Structure formats: C-alpha cells, structure tokens
Length: 203
Image 1: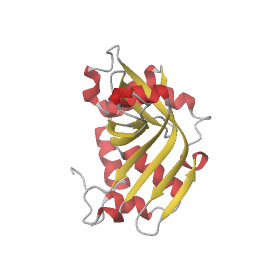
Image 2 (image 1 turned 90 degrees about the horizontal axis):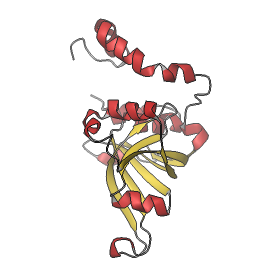
Image 3 (image 1 turned 30 degrees about the vertical axis):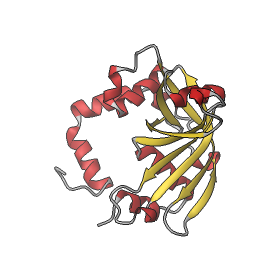
C-alpha cells in the first residue's frame, strides 16, 4: 500500500509535488531570524511549529500571535523559511516528500482568507478574533523539494504557485460552494472521494 507521501513523490513536475505537499499540510516548521537582543538572545535562527493553510494560489497562510517569538522576529526581518513535511507514516521518512519554502511574510487583512484558514483549522475560531492574532501570508520566492533519495529540486515561485488571475469569482464564491456541497450533495462528495482519491465507499 502506498502512502500519501509516496503518491506525491510519484508526480512528475517538482512544482506540482511541492504544491501538493503545501496544500495537504496542516502544520509547518517556521524558521525565522531573531533580532539581536530579542529575549536576551543574540542573532540566532529560531524554529517553531505553526498551523498552516494556503490561499488559492498556494501561498502559505499563518495565524500568528503578536506575543510569539516568531512574530516579533518577523517584524524585525520578514524573511522566513517554512518546512512542510509529508513523510508521516513512512518506515523510512527520508524516502518521503518534504518542501522548504523561502519567502517574505507579511500581515494581511482579508476576511475571505481568514475564513479559509479557520475552515482548515476549526479550533482556531476560538482565538482568530483576538486582538493580538493576525493573519499572515508568505510570498514565496523559491522552494526546495526533496521527494526521496536523489529527487531534489530548487523551484522558482512561478512553478510553485497557481495562476489565479482568471478565477477570482470562483475564489470569492468558495465558502458558499463548500457549504452547499456539504449540505446537499454528500452522495456526490462520497463518489468523488471513491473515484478521484481511490477511497472505497464509506471509507
């Protein structure tokens, strides 16, 4: 039986594999650079675990607290790296796919994207409205994909992201479409899962 990670690695284009890793992930490791003197520390790399989602183009979304060390670091230097890991469940994790995305992280105000994040992480609804929490988006510049031994690629942003310029209306209607399908077309969704994802009925 193949795992999700092995199925990802079987896809041909490195950009497509990396994008799939990002879109399927629910968490990422966020690496920032702590400003000298922050929390009594010199200028050191700092890594933390964060919840993740993506916008419609595949750019990472994060919901961060102003009180967190990584958020203070980003305000001083918004360059960051996000490691997305799709190796769970493999006997040898190094045979699975993982992608590190390099880019700049900025706070954004977008109710549609915040709702998209909360839909991905329902538990975040309890604090998404707190004054110290803000939605952030990474603007990728490059990604580094390791899709197993010997399958290593640098990917430019254009190859990593979807071009959504012609699909803004669909993106705006996303929440309503999802609600409608979940409410009225459960049988169709089950058929999609069975046919497109090779899952048996009732799985």
